[in-house]
Length: 257
Image 1 (cartoon, rainbow, N blue to C red):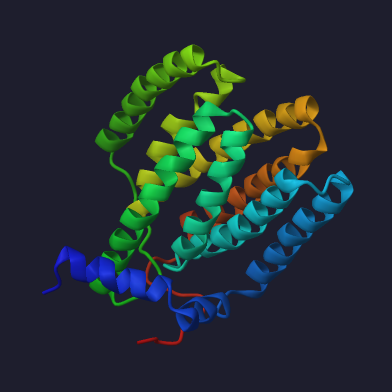
Image 2: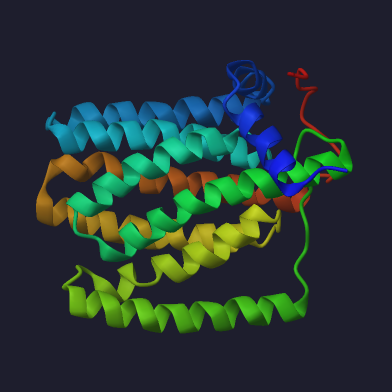
């Protein structure tokens, strides 16, 4: 019988084990690698097209590359997605602070905490199923209603806070935290419905970062392209989670100790 600390420790050990990380990256499908290559290329091209090689552009490039790898692993339900998720949220938090996006700052802070909760929850699920991918689950009507109510309450609180803190684009920006809380919780516990939230978040982020690009210049152009890439990936991830057999893996992942 494993304790909660044992399960978290096992998950952290795997997430920060280079052999485990490379093993899961090396076991993706051809479609995954193709999408990964396209999305990574879009980040590099956007970086050079911006012609603005300042600290914000470099941070945006780092965030883009790490986030895309994280998302591809989430698509397949792989535990080591959290390795890249931790790195991505730290850098994204820095970009959001420097761009004065209050809702995004709250969202990324929440994401960072949830990475560690997610490691525990996914590791626990994999111990139960003896699988190498998290098991997709369906939501009950009661949980759907609870999620909608939670979103409405948190949205009102964030909108009020953002207004008093002088945030930018507050009506759109304030949607990010409640959507992030709901979607990340669903992702943490392996619910398919998480992808509805991610698609909405990515669509809103496309608008927000497009406006930020127009107002602040090419230094955040890479972040705008990242949002477009994430939106494309969200549809692909939704397709995989809603159609895949919960008991099947793409390939056999090497066991690491």
